Length: 280
Length: 340
Image 1 (cartoon, one colour):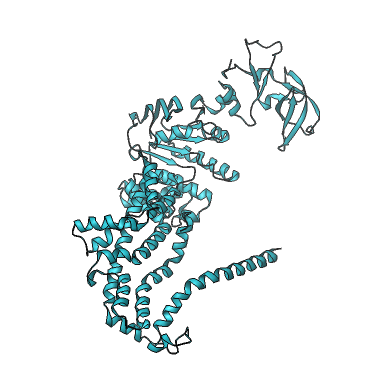
Image 2 (image 1 turned 180 degrees about the vertical axis):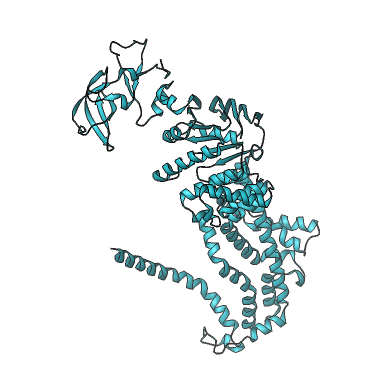
C-alpha cells in the first residue's frame, strides 16, 4: 500500500514538474538568449538563419561595454539607490506594521484601509506632484530625489502586518512582564521572528528599486546620477551603430546583481511569501 | 512573597460587564485557584493582577500597595501562560535569563539562579536547546523556570497544563504541587479543570458569569456548596439534580426547590447503608465501568441520574433498577440557585 502511494506521489510530482517546466522555460528563454548573444562575435549575432548558441564563446562584448560607457558608475548608483530604498521601506514598514497590528488607537482600521488603498493607485499618478515638490526644493538630480519618494511601501506594511498578526500576543505579554519595552520587543523579537517575511519583502523592494526606469529618467540629468536602467537606454540611443552583442553584454552585467540576489535568497523569499499568506 | 488584595474589581469591555465587583483576599504563600467554565472572567481577573489589563473600577493591591496604574514589570509578578510563550529564537538559558538581564542583575547571580531553577525543574541538560527542540512537558518546565528565576512576589498561572496530554498533565500537576510546597510562593492559578483545582489549591475561588460564587478550601466546597452552580461544578461526575415533590421525613422547604445528591450518595439497592430513601424505579441507559466501580446512568422519570456503583457485578443497559439515596446527603437549592 505504502509503495503504491509512494509511486502515485512520485508520478504526480513528475507530472507537476513537467507542467511547471513549460512556463519556467518561457520565462528563462530571454535570459538565456541574452547570455548567448552577449557571448557571440559581431557578425554572428545577425547571421541568418539565427543560431542560439555561439560558435565560439567570447568576452569581447563585455570588455567593449565596460570601456564605452560608465557602467560601473551606473551600477554603483543603482546599488546605492536600491539599497537605500530597501532599507527605508523595511524600516518604515516594520514600524507601521507593528503599530497597526499591536497598538490600539482610534481610527486604526481607517489608517490600515488607507495604506491598503495606496496599493491600488498606480505609481505613475504620483510622478507629476512628486516631481514638482522635489523641483521646488531644488532636489532634482540628487540621490534624495531618487530615494525619498519611495521610502514607504503600502505593500510592505500590509505584508508585515499580516505576518506580525501571526506572532502570539502572549509572547509580547511575557516579555513585558519581564520588563521589556515595546521598541526592544519589536527589534529583539518581532524582527527576528519575522525574518522570512522581511527578507521576502526586502528582495521584492530591492528588485523593484533596481528596475525603476521612469522616475530616475525624469529626475536625473547627469551621467553621474543615472542608474543602471537609464544606462542601458542611454547606451542604446547613443550607440546606434553598436552591435547587439555589446548591448546584451551591458544588460547582462546590469541585471546580474538582482538575479544573483534572488538565487541566493530564493528559499527565504518563497517561505516569506507563503508564510504571510500573501501571494503576489 | 506578598499578599494580594482584590477589592470590588469590575471590568467592562465596551458595554459588556465581564467582571462584577470581585473581592478576593490572598494571603502570603497561599495557593489560590480560580476555577470556572470558559468565559467566566477568571483569566481576565488574572491578567488584571498581572497588569496586562486595567480594571474598570476597584483596586488591586500587591504587598499592601495599590498597583492599578503600575506597569507589569514593576509589580513583581511572573506569569506562566497556557501556550508557554517561550521565546522561540532564544535558547532555554536565554529564555530563563532574559528578564534578569533586563533587570540588570549581576551576571554571576543570573548564572546561579538559572542553574538553581533548572536543577529544581530537571531541565539542566536542555539549557542550550531552543524551545522547538523540547517536548510539551519540558517547555512547561522552562516556562515555570522563567517565572522562578525572577523570584517574584506573586506567581500567576493561566491554565498552564491545558496544552499537555492527560498523562503528562497529572505528572506536571503533582510536580507543581511539590514545587509550591518547596517554594511556598503566593500563587494564583487559573483553570477550568476542577480536578486540578481540587488537587492543587489551598483555597478555591469558583467563578461563574463574572461573579465569585464561593471561596473556600477544596473539601469545604465539595461538602458544603453554597450554590447550585458550585455543587454541579465541583465533583466528578457532576451532582445529580432532581426537581419535583419532596417526600416525607425531610424538612419541607417552601416554594419550588431542586434536590441535589452526588453519585456516591446514590445507590442501586437498599442494602449496606443506613436510612436510605427510595427515589424511584428506572432503566439503565449507560454503564461506564472503571474497574472496582462503575458510573451507572439511570433514566428516572424523564431525568438521568448517575450512580457510583461499587459491586462485582454491574447492571447492564436497559436493566430495570431501583434507585435509593442517602437522605442526609441531599442538598436543596432555591430557584435562584442559592442553597436553602
